Image (cartoon, rainbow, N blue to C red; front, side):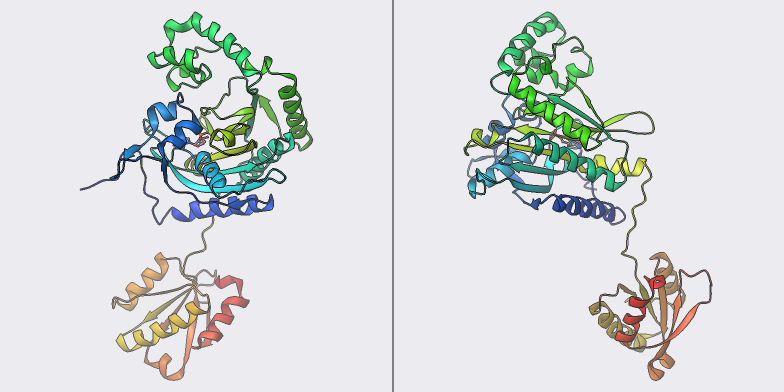
Length: 427
Ligand code: AMP
Protein backbone atom coordinates (compact mmCIF):
# COMPACT_ATOMS: atom_id res chain seq x y z
CA UNK A 1 0.00 0.00 0.00
CA UNK A 2 1.30 3.46 -0.88
CA UNK A 3 1.41 5.69 2.16
CA UNK A 4 1.69 9.46 2.52
CA UNK A 5 5.33 10.64 2.49
CA UNK A 6 7.11 10.98 5.84
CA UNK A 7 6.37 14.28 7.55
CA UNK A 8 3.11 14.92 5.67
CA UNK A 9 -0.44 14.52 6.93
CA UNK A 10 -3.86 14.12 5.39
CA UNK A 11 -6.54 16.46 6.65
CA UNK A 12 -9.50 14.13 6.88
CA UNK A 13 -13.19 15.10 6.59
CA UNK A 14 -13.61 14.55 10.33
CA UNK A 15 -11.03 17.27 10.94
CA UNK A 16 -11.30 19.73 8.07
CA UNK A 17 -13.97 21.85 9.79
CA UNK A 18 -11.40 22.74 12.47
CA UNK A 19 -9.07 24.06 9.76
CA UNK A 20 -11.94 26.03 8.24
CA UNK A 21 -12.81 27.50 11.64
CA UNK A 22 -9.26 28.80 12.17
CA UNK A 23 -9.05 30.11 8.60
CA UNK A 24 -12.36 31.97 8.97
CA UNK A 25 -11.21 33.53 12.22
CA UNK A 26 -7.92 34.64 10.62
CA UNK A 27 -9.76 36.24 7.68
CA UNK A 28 -12.21 37.91 10.05
CA UNK A 29 -9.59 39.37 12.43
CA UNK A 30 -7.09 40.37 9.73
CA UNK A 31 -9.75 42.11 7.64
CA UNK A 32 -10.62 44.26 10.68
CA UNK A 33 -7.03 45.55 10.52
CA UNK A 34 -7.35 46.22 6.77
CA UNK A 35 -5.43 43.19 5.47
CA UNK A 36 -6.22 41.49 2.15
CA UNK A 37 -5.31 37.99 1.02
CA UNK A 38 -2.46 37.22 -1.38
CA UNK A 39 -1.75 33.78 -2.88
CA UNK A 40 1.61 33.00 -4.42
CA UNK A 41 2.97 29.84 -6.11
CA UNK A 42 4.00 26.79 -4.12
CA UNK A 43 7.39 26.79 -5.85
CA UNK A 44 9.71 29.66 -6.69
CA UNK A 45 13.19 30.06 -8.16
CA UNK A 46 15.65 28.73 -5.59
CA UNK A 47 17.60 31.98 -5.71
CA UNK A 48 14.67 33.85 -4.15
CA UNK A 49 14.98 31.90 -0.91
CA UNK A 50 18.78 31.85 -0.93
CA UNK A 51 18.79 35.65 -1.20
CA UNK A 52 15.72 36.35 0.90
CA UNK A 53 16.10 33.93 3.81
CA UNK A 54 19.91 33.91 3.73
CA UNK A 55 22.53 31.47 2.43
CA UNK A 56 23.77 30.59 5.88
CA UNK A 57 20.42 29.80 7.49
CA UNK A 58 19.41 26.28 8.52
CA UNK A 59 16.44 26.52 6.16
CA UNK A 60 18.56 27.23 3.07
CA UNK A 61 21.48 25.00 4.01
CA UNK A 62 19.64 21.94 5.22
CA UNK A 63 15.91 22.06 4.81
CA UNK A 64 14.81 23.11 1.33
CA UNK A 65 13.04 20.85 -1.15
CA UNK A 66 14.99 21.89 -4.23
CA UNK A 67 14.72 20.23 -7.62
CA UNK A 68 15.66 20.80 -11.26
CA UNK A 69 12.68 21.03 -13.61
CA UNK A 70 12.77 19.53 -17.10
CA UNK A 71 14.41 22.71 -18.42
CA UNK A 72 17.12 22.54 -15.77
CA UNK A 73 15.81 25.44 -13.71
CA UNK A 74 16.49 25.17 -10.01
CA UNK A 75 13.16 25.46 -8.22
CA UNK A 76 12.27 25.15 -4.53
CA UNK A 77 9.04 24.39 -2.71
CA UNK A 78 8.42 27.40 -0.48
CA UNK A 79 9.89 26.87 2.99
CA UNK A 80 8.12 30.00 4.30
CA UNK A 81 5.68 32.61 3.04
CA UNK A 82 7.40 35.99 3.16
CA UNK A 83 9.92 35.76 0.31
CA UNK A 84 7.28 34.78 -2.27
CA UNK A 85 4.93 37.54 -1.12
CA UNK A 86 7.66 40.19 -1.41
CA UNK A 87 8.70 38.83 -4.82
CA UNK A 88 5.10 39.11 -5.99
CA UNK A 89 4.65 42.65 -4.64
CA UNK A 90 7.80 43.82 -6.41
CA UNK A 91 6.88 42.04 -9.66
CA UNK A 92 3.39 43.56 -9.72
CA UNK A 93 4.42 47.03 -8.51
CA UNK A 94 2.14 46.85 -5.50
CA UNK A 95 4.49 48.72 -3.17
CA UNK A 96 4.22 52.46 -2.76
CA UNK A 97 6.29 54.74 -0.54
CA UNK A 98 3.37 56.63 0.96
CA UNK A 99 0.96 54.00 2.14
CA UNK A 100 1.28 50.57 3.73
CA UNK A 101 0.38 47.47 1.81
CA UNK A 102 -1.33 45.06 4.22
CA UNK A 103 -1.42 41.43 3.14
CA UNK A 104 -2.12 38.03 4.62
CA UNK A 105 -1.62 34.50 3.31
CA UNK A 106 -2.60 30.96 4.22
CA UNK A 107 -0.23 28.52 2.59
CA UNK A 108 1.49 25.17 2.80
CA UNK A 109 5.27 25.25 3.38
CA UNK A 110 7.94 22.59 2.96
CA UNK A 111 11.05 21.95 5.05
CA UNK A 112 13.15 18.81 5.13
CA UNK A 113 13.24 18.49 8.91
CA UNK A 114 13.18 15.53 11.26
CA UNK A 115 9.44 14.98 11.77
CA UNK A 116 8.34 15.10 15.41
CA UNK A 117 5.40 16.50 17.38
CA UNK A 118 4.57 19.93 15.96
CA UNK A 119 7.22 19.65 13.24
CA UNK A 120 6.35 18.37 9.79
CA UNK A 121 7.89 18.38 6.34
CA UNK A 122 4.73 19.75 4.81
CA UNK A 123 3.10 22.22 7.18
CA UNK A 124 0.85 25.22 6.90
CA UNK A 125 1.34 28.81 7.86
CA UNK A 126 -1.04 31.70 8.36
CA UNK A 127 0.95 34.87 7.97
CA UNK A 128 0.77 38.59 7.38
CA UNK A 129 3.09 41.15 5.84
CA UNK A 130 2.74 44.90 6.02
CA UNK A 131 5.07 46.68 3.64
CA UNK A 132 5.85 50.39 3.56
CA UNK A 133 6.17 51.59 7.13
CA UNK A 134 9.14 52.17 9.39
CA UNK A 135 6.94 53.26 12.28
CA UNK A 136 7.16 51.35 15.58
CA UNK A 137 3.36 51.61 15.70
CA UNK A 138 3.26 49.23 12.77
CA UNK A 139 5.28 46.65 14.74
CA UNK A 140 2.82 47.23 17.56
CA UNK A 141 -0.23 46.81 15.34
CA UNK A 142 1.11 43.57 13.88
CA UNK A 143 1.92 42.06 17.29
CA UNK A 144 -1.45 43.13 18.67
CA UNK A 145 -3.23 41.62 15.68
CA UNK A 146 -1.50 38.27 16.31
CA UNK A 147 -2.50 38.44 19.99
CA UNK A 148 -6.12 39.32 19.17
CA UNK A 149 -6.34 36.45 16.68
CA UNK A 150 -5.25 34.03 19.40
CA UNK A 151 -7.62 35.56 21.95
CA UNK A 152 -10.58 35.23 19.59
CA UNK A 153 -9.67 31.61 18.95
CA UNK A 154 -9.98 31.15 22.72
CA UNK A 155 -6.22 30.87 23.37
CA UNK A 156 -5.81 33.38 26.17
CA UNK A 157 -2.68 32.54 28.08
CA UNK A 158 -0.16 33.29 25.39
CA UNK A 159 3.29 34.68 26.17
CA UNK A 160 4.57 37.44 23.94
CA UNK A 161 8.38 37.45 23.82
CA UNK A 162 10.14 40.27 22.06
CA UNK A 163 13.69 41.26 21.26
CA UNK A 164 15.52 44.00 19.42
CA UNK A 165 18.14 42.69 16.99
CA UNK A 166 19.28 46.07 15.71
CA UNK A 167 19.97 47.24 12.18
CA UNK A 168 22.75 47.16 9.62
CA UNK A 169 24.43 50.07 11.41
CA UNK A 170 24.65 48.60 14.90
CA UNK A 171 24.69 44.86 14.29
CA UNK A 172 28.34 44.59 13.07
CA UNK A 173 29.58 45.72 16.51
CA UNK A 174 27.54 42.98 18.15
CA UNK A 175 28.67 40.40 15.61
CA UNK A 176 32.29 41.08 16.59
CA UNK A 177 31.44 40.57 20.27
CA UNK A 178 29.50 37.40 19.51
CA UNK A 179 32.32 36.01 17.41
CA UNK A 180 34.75 36.58 20.27
CA UNK A 181 32.40 34.70 22.60
CA UNK A 182 31.88 31.86 20.13
CA UNK A 183 35.65 31.45 19.84
CA UNK A 184 35.67 30.53 23.54
CA UNK A 185 33.10 27.76 23.10
CA UNK A 186 34.03 26.76 19.56
CA UNK A 187 35.06 23.23 20.58
CA UNK A 188 31.46 22.55 21.67
CA UNK A 189 29.80 23.68 18.42
CA UNK A 190 28.61 21.42 15.61
CA UNK A 191 30.75 21.33 12.44
CA UNK A 192 28.39 23.58 10.52
CA UNK A 193 28.38 26.23 13.27
CA UNK A 194 32.19 26.14 13.41
CA UNK A 195 32.03 27.44 9.83
CA UNK A 196 29.00 29.67 10.30
CA UNK A 197 30.48 31.55 13.23
CA UNK A 198 32.72 33.36 10.77
CA UNK A 199 30.24 33.82 7.92
CA UNK A 200 27.01 34.57 9.84
CA UNK A 201 27.47 34.11 13.60
CA UNK A 202 23.90 35.14 14.47
CA UNK A 203 22.71 31.95 12.83
CA UNK A 204 24.75 29.88 15.27
CA UNK A 205 22.34 30.99 18.01
CA UNK A 206 19.38 29.37 16.34
CA UNK A 207 21.13 26.16 15.32
CA UNK A 208 18.69 23.51 16.56
CA UNK A 209 21.53 21.25 17.68
CA UNK A 210 23.78 23.75 19.49
CA UNK A 211 20.97 25.82 20.98
CA UNK A 212 19.31 22.79 22.53
CA UNK A 213 22.58 22.15 24.41
CA UNK A 214 22.33 25.58 26.07
CA UNK A 215 25.77 26.65 24.79
CA UNK A 216 24.72 30.28 24.58
CA UNK A 217 23.55 31.07 28.07
CA UNK A 218 26.47 33.43 28.65
CA UNK A 219 26.55 34.88 25.14
CA UNK A 220 26.46 38.69 24.88
CA UNK A 221 22.96 40.07 24.28
CA UNK A 222 22.30 41.95 21.10
CA UNK A 223 19.73 44.15 22.83
CA UNK A 224 22.53 45.76 24.89
CA UNK A 225 24.46 46.75 21.79
CA UNK A 226 21.88 48.39 19.52
CA UNK A 227 22.12 52.01 18.33
CA UNK A 228 20.03 54.91 19.64
CA UNK A 229 17.62 54.77 16.71
CA UNK A 230 16.90 51.06 17.23
CA UNK A 231 16.60 51.60 20.96
CA UNK A 232 14.04 54.42 20.55
CA UNK A 233 12.06 52.31 18.10
CA UNK A 234 11.95 49.42 20.56
CA UNK A 235 10.97 51.65 23.48
CA UNK A 236 7.89 52.80 21.55
CA UNK A 237 6.91 49.22 20.73
CA UNK A 238 7.24 48.25 24.39
CA UNK A 239 5.28 51.26 25.62
CA UNK A 240 2.57 50.59 23.04
CA UNK A 241 2.21 46.96 24.11
CA UNK A 242 1.84 48.12 27.70
CA UNK A 243 -0.76 50.73 26.69
CA UNK A 244 -2.78 48.05 24.89
CA UNK A 245 -2.68 45.87 27.99
CA UNK A 246 -0.63 43.19 26.26
CA UNK A 247 1.82 41.49 28.62
CA UNK A 248 5.23 40.77 27.13
CA UNK A 249 8.67 39.70 28.19
CA UNK A 250 12.03 40.48 26.66
CA UNK A 251 14.05 37.51 25.50
CA UNK A 252 17.45 38.58 24.27
CA UNK A 253 18.06 35.11 22.79
CA UNK A 254 15.35 35.42 20.13
CA UNK A 255 17.13 36.06 16.84
CA UNK A 256 14.70 34.14 14.55
CA UNK A 257 16.06 31.69 12.01
CA UNK A 258 15.86 33.95 8.98
CA UNK A 259 18.43 36.55 7.94
CA UNK A 260 16.02 39.27 6.94
CA UNK A 261 14.90 40.48 10.35
CA UNK A 262 15.94 43.86 11.80
CA UNK A 263 14.92 45.72 14.99
CA UNK A 264 11.82 44.11 16.54
CA UNK A 265 11.52 40.32 16.50
CA UNK A 266 8.90 38.44 18.45
CA UNK A 267 7.48 35.04 19.26
CA UNK A 268 4.12 33.97 20.67
CA UNK A 269 4.49 30.98 22.93
CA UNK A 270 1.90 28.61 24.38
CA UNK A 271 2.45 26.17 27.22
CA UNK A 272 0.56 22.87 27.18
CA UNK A 273 -0.75 20.88 30.13
CA UNK A 274 2.60 19.04 30.40
CA UNK A 275 4.39 22.36 30.63
CA UNK A 276 5.89 22.00 27.16
CA UNK A 277 6.35 25.31 25.40
CA UNK A 278 5.57 25.68 21.73
CA UNK A 279 6.40 28.68 19.56
CA UNK A 280 3.14 29.11 17.77
CA UNK A 281 4.02 32.30 15.90
CA UNK A 282 7.21 34.04 14.91
CA UNK A 283 7.75 37.36 13.26
CA UNK A 284 9.45 40.70 13.13
CA UNK A 285 10.52 43.72 11.16
CA UNK A 286 12.50 43.44 7.95
CA UNK A 287 13.93 46.74 6.80
CA UNK A 288 16.20 45.48 4.01
CA UNK A 289 14.41 42.52 2.49
CA UNK A 290 12.45 44.36 -0.19
CA UNK A 291 15.60 46.05 -1.46
CA UNK A 292 17.54 42.80 -1.18
CA UNK A 293 15.01 41.14 -3.48
CA UNK A 294 15.22 43.89 -6.10
CA UNK A 295 12.60 46.38 -4.89
CA UNK A 296 12.84 49.90 -3.56
CA UNK A 297 14.09 50.83 -0.13
CA UNK A 298 10.96 50.14 1.86
CA UNK A 299 10.45 48.46 5.22
CA UNK A 300 8.14 45.70 6.31
CA UNK A 301 6.84 43.79 9.32
CA UNK A 302 5.26 40.34 9.38
CA UNK A 303 4.54 37.17 11.27
CA UNK A 304 3.66 33.56 10.58
CA UNK A 305 1.59 31.21 12.69
CA UNK A 306 2.15 27.48 12.42
CA UNK A 307 -1.33 26.20 11.54
CA UNK A 308 -0.78 22.68 12.91
CA UNK A 309 0.52 24.08 16.19
CA UNK A 310 -2.52 26.35 16.48
CA UNK A 311 -4.81 23.37 16.04
CA UNK A 312 -3.02 21.20 18.56
CA UNK A 313 -3.17 24.10 21.05
CA UNK A 314 -6.94 24.37 20.49
CA UNK A 315 -7.21 20.64 21.05
CA UNK A 316 -5.06 20.53 24.17
CA UNK A 317 -6.96 23.47 25.70
CA UNK A 318 -10.21 21.64 24.82
CA UNK A 319 -11.62 24.61 22.96
CA UNK A 320 -14.92 23.67 21.48
CA UNK A 321 -15.20 24.19 17.72
CA UNK A 322 -18.69 23.75 16.41
CA UNK A 323 -19.29 22.45 12.96
CA UNK A 324 -22.51 23.29 11.15
CA UNK A 325 -22.38 20.82 8.32
CA UNK A 326 -24.73 18.12 9.55
CA UNK A 327 -27.95 17.74 7.49
CA UNK A 328 -30.76 19.99 8.68
CA UNK A 329 -33.12 17.49 7.14
CA UNK A 330 -32.73 13.83 6.14
CA UNK A 331 -35.39 12.58 3.71
CA UNK A 332 -36.08 8.85 3.95
CA UNK A 333 -37.73 7.20 0.92
CA UNK A 334 -39.49 3.89 1.34
CA UNK A 335 -39.17 2.62 -2.26
CA UNK A 336 -37.98 3.57 -5.74
CA UNK A 337 -41.07 5.66 -6.54
CA UNK A 338 -40.67 7.75 -3.43
CA UNK A 339 -36.95 8.01 -4.17
CA UNK A 340 -37.76 10.02 -7.33
CA UNK A 341 -39.95 12.36 -5.29
CA UNK A 342 -37.27 12.63 -2.61
CA UNK A 343 -34.55 13.50 -5.12
CA UNK A 344 -36.65 16.36 -6.52
CA UNK A 345 -37.62 17.69 -3.10
CA UNK A 346 -34.00 17.47 -1.89
CA UNK A 347 -32.74 19.40 -4.90
CA UNK A 348 -35.37 22.14 -4.43
CA UNK A 349 -34.47 22.46 -0.73
CA UNK A 350 -30.74 22.54 -1.45
CA UNK A 351 -31.40 25.39 -3.91
CA UNK A 352 -33.09 27.16 -0.98
CA UNK A 353 -29.86 26.73 1.05
CA UNK A 354 -31.02 23.90 3.32
CA UNK A 355 -28.52 21.09 4.05
CA UNK A 356 -30.32 17.89 3.03
CA UNK A 357 -29.22 14.27 3.36
CA UNK A 358 -30.71 11.41 1.31
CA UNK A 359 -29.77 7.83 0.50
CA UNK A 360 -29.35 6.84 -3.16
CA UNK A 361 -28.51 3.20 -2.57
CA UNK A 362 -31.90 1.65 -1.82
CA UNK A 363 -31.22 1.16 1.89
CA UNK A 364 -34.08 -0.08 4.08
CA UNK A 365 -36.07 2.53 6.03
CA UNK A 366 -34.38 1.33 9.22
CA UNK A 367 -30.88 1.75 7.73
CA UNK A 368 -31.78 5.20 6.43
CA UNK A 369 -32.94 6.21 9.92
CA UNK A 370 -29.66 4.89 11.30
CA UNK A 371 -27.76 6.92 8.71
CA UNK A 372 -29.71 10.08 9.60
CA UNK A 373 -28.71 9.53 13.22
CA UNK A 374 -25.09 8.91 12.34
CA UNK A 375 -24.99 12.15 10.37
CA UNK A 376 -26.67 13.97 13.31
CA UNK A 377 -29.51 15.17 11.09
CA UNK A 378 -31.71 17.69 12.88
CA UNK A 379 -34.99 16.47 11.32
CA UNK A 380 -36.24 13.52 9.31
CA UNK A 381 -39.19 13.13 6.92
CA UNK A 382 -40.27 9.71 5.63
CA UNK A 383 -41.71 9.73 2.11
CA UNK A 384 -44.06 6.95 0.98
CA UNK A 385 -47.17 6.62 -1.23
CA UNK A 386 -49.41 8.36 1.27
CA UNK A 387 -47.13 11.39 1.60
CA UNK A 388 -46.79 11.66 -2.17
CA UNK A 389 -50.55 11.58 -2.80
CA UNK A 390 -51.55 13.88 0.10
CA UNK A 391 -48.50 16.17 -0.44
CA UNK A 392 -48.20 16.28 3.34
CA UNK A 393 -45.55 14.78 5.61
CA UNK A 394 -44.41 14.60 9.23
CA UNK A 395 -41.21 16.42 10.13
CA UNK A 396 -39.69 14.53 13.04
CA UNK A 397 -37.41 16.71 15.15
CA UNK A 398 -34.49 14.50 16.13
CA UNK A 399 -32.55 16.82 18.43
CA UNK A 400 -35.57 17.63 20.60
CA UNK A 401 -35.89 16.61 24.26
CA UNK A 402 -39.39 15.36 23.48
CA UNK A 403 -38.69 12.12 21.60
CA UNK A 404 -41.89 12.23 19.62
CA UNK A 405 -41.90 15.83 18.56
CA UNK A 406 -43.32 15.92 15.05
CA UNK A 407 -44.91 18.65 13.03
CA UNK A 408 -47.06 18.26 9.99
CA UNK A 409 -45.93 20.12 6.90
CA UNK A 410 -46.88 20.51 3.25
CA UNK A 411 -44.32 18.72 1.12
CA UNK A 412 -43.44 21.93 -0.61
CA UNK A 413 -39.79 23.04 -0.64
CA UNK A 414 -40.59 26.73 0.05
CA UNK A 415 -42.79 25.85 3.03
CA UNK A 416 -40.24 23.43 4.52
CA UNK A 417 -37.40 25.91 4.00
CA UNK A 418 -39.48 28.56 5.79
CA UNK A 419 -39.83 26.23 8.80
CA UNK A 420 -36.05 25.96 9.03
CA UNK A 421 -35.62 29.70 8.74
CA UNK A 422 -38.05 30.58 11.52
CA UNK A 423 -37.20 27.82 13.95
CA UNK A 424 -33.69 27.66 15.35
CA UNK A 425 -34.33 24.24 16.92
CA UNK A 426 -34.06 22.62 13.54
CA UNK A 427 -30.84 24.31 12.50
P1 AMP B 1 9.33 30.43 10.88
O1 AMP B 1 8.94 30.65 9.43
O2 AMP B 1 10.46 29.46 11.05
O3 AMP B 1 9.49 31.72 11.62
O4 AMP B 1 8.08 29.68 11.55
C1 AMP B 1 6.86 30.30 11.83
C2 AMP B 1 5.96 29.32 12.55
O5 AMP B 1 5.71 28.21 11.69
C3 AMP B 1 6.61 28.70 13.78
O6 AMP B 1 6.39 29.51 14.91
C4 AMP B 1 5.91 27.38 13.89
O7 AMP B 1 4.68 27.56 14.59
C5 AMP B 1 5.62 27.02 12.46
N1 AMP B 1 6.58 26.04 11.92
C6 AMP B 1 7.84 26.25 11.50
N2 AMP B 1 8.40 25.10 11.05
C7 AMP B 1 7.46 24.15 11.18
C8 AMP B 1 7.41 22.74 10.88
N3 AMP B 1 8.42 22.10 10.32
N4 AMP B 1 6.26 22.07 11.15
C9 AMP B 1 5.20 22.70 11.70
N5 AMP B 1 5.18 24.02 12.00
C10 AMP B 1 6.29 24.73 11.75
